Image (cartoon, rainbow, N blue to C red; front, side, top):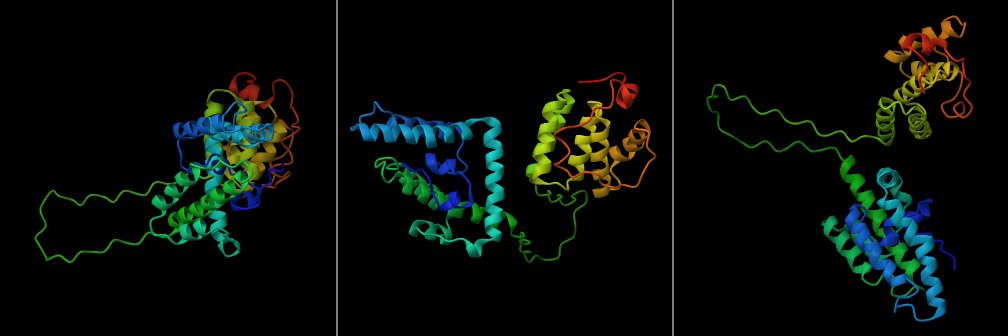
Length: 316
């Protein structure tokens, strides 16, 4: 049986694991696990729901190809965090492309218009979940229907977060004599949401603090794939290469950082020293390699080098 789905989020080359398990996109791990166990019992070959050999085989295929991978993705700490961040970005992208988004189910069209988004969405998901895998032959269509609901929900949430907040209405008050020592309370600044790349940078910085440079480099390389022009990411990966005594790769990324941000403190401090160690004169901030092409086969620069002399020995 083909498990290809071409509606909802699946239409955008994205595997909608929440739709497979029929849980809301903001479901917590406890809710996800509870739902998974219910589906697993339903699809298990020994279940009373799968009577024929054909149903047992089909149920096992749903488990191995869709349900188990969805559970593993949504219950792993790191994989779930990254997955949720990608979902948020997809919602914003679809909002920008909303004129090309086509809804095929009445339920999704109603969700797009309802004023009570949260209640309608979660009630619909719960209702569909009651019978999602009762007919295995129809299960893919049900998953596609849930994915359309997820698509609409993400778009509407992205619309709410991107809308400029309206200033509160000013109540009409009579003029009164101000009281001493009662300054008005400051208005709290709205919390700033981290971008995906900032999540990678934060994890990388934590790994660097633990001297886990190889893992930090992987995080930063992934971040640069998403945002090649992030000066902070270039500067931080340059420091990782510097700590690994890979001076040529450090120079490449410091060059990139300075081109994007001429005031980058780490690049301004270390690039002239690297140039000197490599036997080069300080040059203009010219990018000599792209963000993603030069990281796979870095060149070493000896056993001691710049880093060993300045930091008291080579670190690993």
